[in-house]
Length: 436
Image 1 (tube, rainbow, N blue to C red):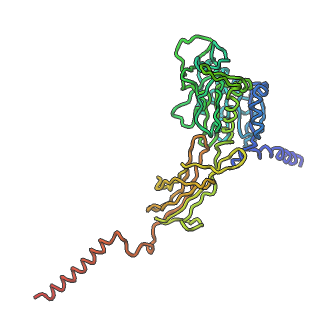
Image 2 (spheres, rainbow, N blue to C red; image 1 turned 180 degrees about the vertical axis):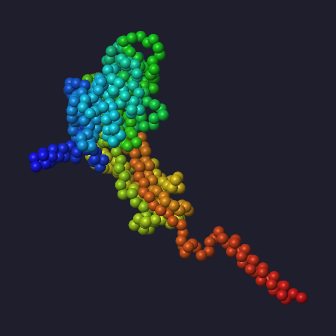
């Protein structure tokens, strides 16, 4: 009896943790695990952390080598997102390792990885699993002798001032980032064959990756715009990842420092870092660009109920409602590139859906003259937005024997030939019988 009481007490204590997991219907108030190399990062990066807290996120800070680390308990994930601000961690504590982090992402959860010159193989391997390759040379940093921050170290030019942003309102917000973003860290590259990884902040053509404390003996392996400073990934399961080679990118020092890019007369009182990391964190945590589709319906034109099957050449109407999370509520999603397929082995009908501006998308078309088991399919993939993949199966039958037209227009030549043959035979018979 005592053991049973302890079980109930433990279950109720764990219940709030399990109930707080990510709900795609309301993607806010989420639990985030933040792993640090040192607790001093809580104060040195407090502006970024306070920004997340003010937006409803529950942050739990732990050291990367904490022996109690675990992402799940009894088969249930305890967190909805993971922030790795521990570039020098040789290994994680507890049950957390490379496989656990990748499984966490594969389960649809979000991840932020920030490295620096002290990045270990563990952190680099996590990035590699996500489609990003950090420079293999230890102590190599991004150097740029033309696009550096004037306030930085003049000799090394490792404090980069970059304004080469991805052109995407959904990832970086609708408000332009006017001031350059300060970056000090290591370079990484993105495979051109990987369409899921995007460079959000790129280096200038004059940048290269090398050890600033030594002279170059060989050409650097990473140069120019091939160097990515910040990259993002949206997996096929809609999990989102941000990877950067600069932990200082999120620091209070770079968020609030004045910046002037070399060769530019413009001087800004504050860098663009705060706006940049705030906007990109909104994206990675699904506060923006998060879509949902509801009320997928279809019916014959002029009817309201969904039929159990269609007949070839029926006129039908298809509709679906699509909404976007605004950070506080679901708002109608407006786009002109949403399409529906009427699919059996291949699309027989591909129709662009029209919208009323209130979230409703619809289209009307005729069922093709082919019978079988079809699917209504909506596969929507747009830069920065969660992917939508919807399908609904419906059979299509041919005409019944009593549903064909009495006289088929295309058969008129055959009808005429038959009657002509009958008339010819009748005339021949008359002539044969009565001709003397």
